Length: 370
Image (cartoon, rainbow, N blue to C red; front, side, top):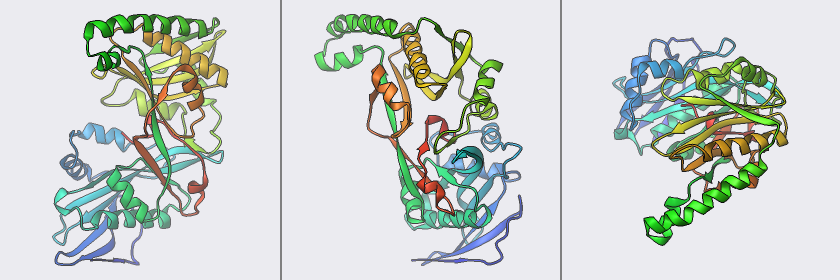
């Protein structure tokens, strides 16, 4: 049994510690929740995060992860503490710019949800997330909240009022079918003989689809032409992340681990589309994180040139794009031969007013907080 009591004295105090909730656990004593800022708690965040993740991170990564823009509120870190004041659980909120009904709004993006394995199964994680949700409702009532959770976090968030607004569906384009054919014929030699003409047909079809007056330019960093195009992108119809220059630079150009490539689509010398992807060498995959174009025709032309470029790359097996199930790009991917797989994640939203729950969200792999 868990009994929670929210203290009336809970007030926002920047990076100062604010106690907000007491949690009585049968035979476990009184646990508590509190909220702090990021600065001054970096090492504690890193230690708890790394203790509950397969891949450890660094302080440099946290500095990037919790970096705020000039017009956003400070990051908020929510803690779960034992009766002895040991920090055993956390969740954080970093405010990122999203569009909501054509209005740019700083959105509370939730991440780094962690609970020490010894304390799981007692409802403590749910209590922490309830405290976080109530705190956001009181102190940030105008900010919607967004998360791409693990399955355990999804269940807990659903119980404290969060709504699952959509699924994330991987779309895969097979560039080299050899491994898939080999699984059917069980002969490497025969699989190669069958796959070779299939690849030749792919190249011919893609070449015929490619626009004659368009070109695709790849760079390791976004140039001024691409940033200017991003600056002029119209807001999505419902809700979606701001793809302006500041967001592109932070999310991709300044990422501490992953090297991203920026593709700029031009037609008659004018920038008309952008695409950001990761070359996953070990997986022999190019993964598209974000894409946008001026018109549907520009989007199809850009994707066709991208497929054409990928077909010419050595040792590349697949292209991968993860989008929400209602994303406007899905139809164009299907036309080009991308295959939709079973969804592998969901996203949840919450807002004090209920507005976020009613919007159609436009989500890509770039929305993940890592």
